[in-house]
Image 1 (cartoon, protein in one colour):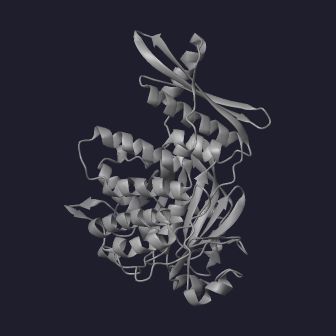
Image 2 (cartoon, helix red, strand yellow):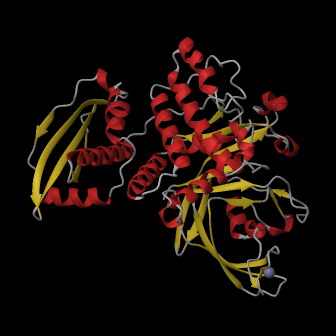
Image 3 (cartoon, protein in one colour):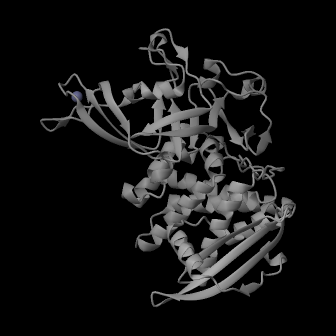
Amino acid sequence: MSSNFSPIKELPFNISFNEFQSALSESVNHETICEPIKQLINNTYHRRRDIFISIRKWVDIKNYANKDHHVVKWELKSNSNELFFAIGVASRKKAAADIAASLLLEKVNLAINFEQNISGLPNYRGHCYTWPTLITFLNDPEFSRCLMNGLALIRQEKRDNFKTFYGLKELHKNYIKGTRNGPLVVDHLPTGIENKYQDWRKVAESYVRSTGRRDVLNVDAALIYIIMQLRDSVSQDYGSPGGDSRLFYRDLFDQIEKEFRLKEINPFRHFNQVAMKFSYNCKCGAQNEPIDLEMNSLTVAPKYHDDLGVKSLQEFLESSLMLSNQTCSKNNDGMICNEPIVDVSKLEFINAPKYLVFTIKDVIPASIENPKDILMCSELKFKVGQTNHRYELKSHGFQISNDVQKTLRDTEPQDDDSQDGTHTCVMIKTNDEWKEIDNNKVLEPLRVYKTIKQRMLIFYRRID
Ligand SMILES: [Zn+2]
């Protein structure tokens, strides 16, 4: 695509010392997103010529502290003559240009409310269970930044077993490329592809020849690559169609954490890992036993006790009940106790990750009498130390039975509907509007879920 556009001329400029110093410190602290120049020129400037009238680039070299520093400045001008610019400083010119582009995109994305080009994904083999996680994250610039950080870390490591991570990076690249001009179109399903994992490319090539849709094929290829990694490293179940969206989410990020070996260098640590500490009692005699936990999701029961007085997911969180599936880790004469813990107290969260992810249990625990619905509030307050962070409901996946699918677009499902579901759909909020995604179709939802349901996977995104 970029070859269709004339290259951008580099103009000389002379940066002032003050401007240089502030650009230098901003550059050092900035984490660039994936392929920032392509994103800036192709995906932002050329795609939104209705908003932008010009793009310009300046270059300079500054000697500072006995070192040559490359300086690159990018500038976008809007049709209302508003100027957006950013300056990157680095020892290499390409790096300086990347940083400046990434910084500029950040500014522009904050200032202009772009219509998000959300897209579903092709579903050739029953992989709808991956959509809640993938559609939510592939459309998030913060996720792109984590991939970038991960790549930088991998370059330092002298190992090559980052297969799942690479798969995710390839999927992201192909999804962004494939959806550049609108949602992915899957108009012709290649016949015979449904159960193929190993030799799918043979079947798919004929599809590409007949439709010219290589972008869809590349997205599909990257997805199957990830699925194959999970089949080989986590569970044979990934070798056949169908699955559970909650398990996929957990397995995927557990596997990536394993590939990075140390949780401290997991590039998604501050993205979706929530850390906490609390104390508990146990019938083995453990009293106020302290425990530290770091998890990529919080497991929540689908209902609460009538007499608990909980009205929202937030209150439910604070009630600590969600930790009731933890077991005692006390070592009694060489044996780990493993009994279910009781009396959780002094619960404290240690970080506020970009995403808080909730997995909702399959069934209402028998211990819950007079079960009541838990509100899936549009905003959560989440306290870390003295700070209250705000999270907004971003998306959720839900499983439904194929035979009731049509009517479920009109009415909220009953509990037993959501239990025996075989097809997964996604509700996602983009630019203050909810979209319902069913395979590659992006639909206007006919309703919004108000309460949490069994088997749901729910994503809350931090807004401050
Ligand atoms: Zn115990």
